[in-house]
Image 1 (cartoon, helix red, strand yellow):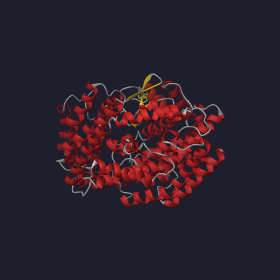
Image 2 (spheres, rainbow, N blue to C red):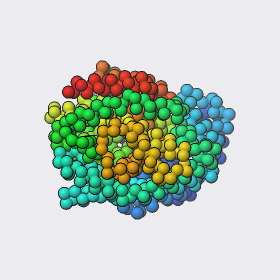
Image 3 (tube, rainbow, N blue to C red):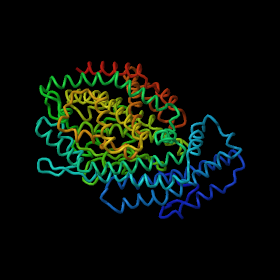
Length: 567
């Protein structure tokens, strides 16, 4: 069982009721004399303890708010932190960064151990601007409105009021009329909020652009690349990735669609894209959140006992909220807890195969948190998403050996694997679309909502196969981007899914050749946290950090071969 480490610097049972509770600790760090490299390392440990405490306090406020968006008290608790605490921490962080970098002992630190950390600190100092502190608080408060808006949407199907996540299960129903009804109701519910979401997005774009200008950047895209610490690739690499997806992936998606068209025997409408081509009813791999949890533990235990232990520990500590319900924010996430080192998994399960994929994906993130928990500094555990998503997407694939926990029937198991592998190929064009959309949005910040709509429709054609008939539904298609939470809450966090997916396919390819070695390398890579470069972490996992066209081509050939084996 995980035990909570007692504080060495902070008082135990500390409660953040006001800034006055935290201020003395920041002030003490700022004023403390550092007279040796040993004292500098102690200072770093104490700063880390404070950062971990603050981070977990905010984490719990966010988790509770997303679990119940109707609870004003929970929303106020989160907004209090965002509006009153974070803006006061930001200037102190900058002063503490300057204090550390000005210390003569910083050069005596183990440069290999602290290289990534110090590189990040220098970047933080370079882009910090006092005038951005209130703007960043406003962005945090404004972006959370997205979850409240979407979480409130409900539709009626077969006489029952259900969430959009639950309604989306009907898109796999063999009754085409029922599928169309579900599609129309889901999209009508979204369309009713389209203008409100457009206005919200305009507000976020304006705020983000101002932050970038204040920090001396031409646009928010360039600022965000710096803030996210994208030291390993540039915007042009992203454009090359988009082009590679068009050349190497979209032709495969077209083949899938041609097979679907031939099997169904009618024009493909948007509500025909998830139903089984043999008209089999949708798979129902679990019956409840508890059932999903039990089966996930069984699945993970077949791959590695430690993976199962992680999920069991989270359950014991109340770190799971899995089922979809009214008033719950959309999406799914694994939120690391920097102090207790036991993360929280949030999702909207509605008994679908996609939910199994989400659970295993977030479970991979959770395992990552456990494996990196013993690293000395909280900052050592803050992985960039290119690494974090390698953990989760690799888990989706290596857990195939335990997937019979959800699908005991061999035919169902085969079908679930086929759906997942096809889904991996199909999602890559969507990832490229969302990423290219963001590059345009933030390098053209003066665009109008109408410009944005037109650009999105053009992108949908560019990364589409032209085989899905949206005639008469263009008003829905023009706003499909609004379902992507990342655009509102975590801008530019999306292409990493594509990069990490390529890494994950390579991990799985290694796993099929030598399971023991691949799992060992996976665990070794995740235990590094962010103490090495992205390339070095991928190398530890036995794969390359590569998203070139030739690499994509080789991996698409590999997946195509695995799909043929399932046939």
